[in-house]
Image: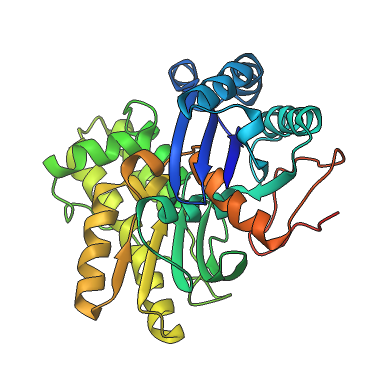
Length: 339
């Protein structure tokens, strides 16, 4: 069964063809990242316009690379939430038109479910498992009970880990995206040079908070500038990255122990972070847990993960019609109400 996946939730316009949820036949991505670098972050209006310009050719290329036509496609899967609303609407409307014109079923896919599904492509992993989903806009600990049954164990109460890393990088005058730049230079610094607070959230022992860490690094930099002092950026980057990773893995470990999970999965854009990958491996080795992390090429936004999750949603019977809308926010554990 071949699923055509379409992804446009942020600044990547992507299309892919995936067979039986795991065999990637094509995975095409057009990004407007370089343009957003001029502004130090994603500009929603620019992202939406670039999606509109690129989506037709990206889908065409995905079909050609997979050596198939729409006649060979069993269903069209598309990201409908969460994300930048204007960007999402481009993908959703294109997918609706394509599915209607070609008389194909339309399958709505939650973006974070797609990130989790990137592990089905990269690894021979099956639910149930405990997943840390961490990206620029989201930080969740999710119990994945089945391919379509998700339970949120913990989540951030303010900023996401990826956002905190990006904002910290910008404060240090590092190139955008800041989280990637921090990861690149951290090996040259002393991760114990700066001490950051360990956030505590009263709502749940598994919830995160990163706004205080972000404020702390901003204050360190601003105070040094006001006093005319120099800061070792390598040390600050390494220390901040360590603090963020420690927060993520401390809560993940507690959730896994308390909920008796021995199969751990990490997904989302920040799953590409080298320290998170290394420390997660060390954590799982200590507990004799299995660890699954996507290949680097599937960590960021892509359509192969949407097609993969779309396959399992399709089997479950999830369908949408021409009334499908896009949503900027949507809980991962809220199932789409099928038509």
